[in-house]
Amino acid sequence: MSEISLEQFAATAPGAATVIDVRQPREYVDGHVSGSILMPMTELSSRLAELDRTRPVHVICASGNRSGALADFLAGLGFEALSVAGGVTAWAASGRPLVTRVRPTAPAPAAS
Image (cartoon, rainbow, N blue to C red; front, side, top):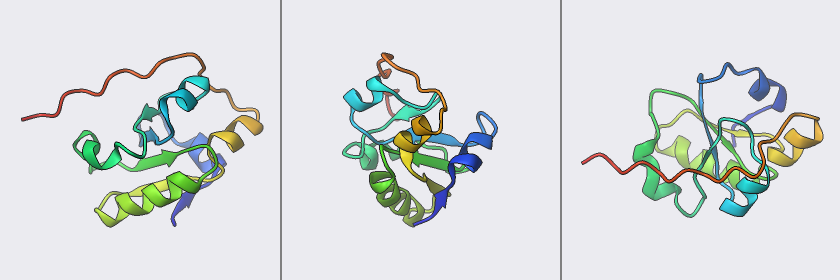
């Protein structure tokens, strides 16, 4: 599994990578990293068209287990994908802010 440390993740310039949160909607609403896009693990394979293959993808979950598996999945499909070490739990424990009580927006319709 390829990982990015919290320090490297925090230092990544906004917009330099797509950040996807693969947890469930309730987890996301309870607290997520600013700028992350909710893409629950059960939906990821059907939403691949939403990801830009020319940009790195940083995958985050609660602790790094789900994100690790899904970063490997994406890497196998040719994405430059990294799992965020420690996930949202480590992010919050390090004193970094979370966005709370913000519901995810509906995914954009797939291009035809």
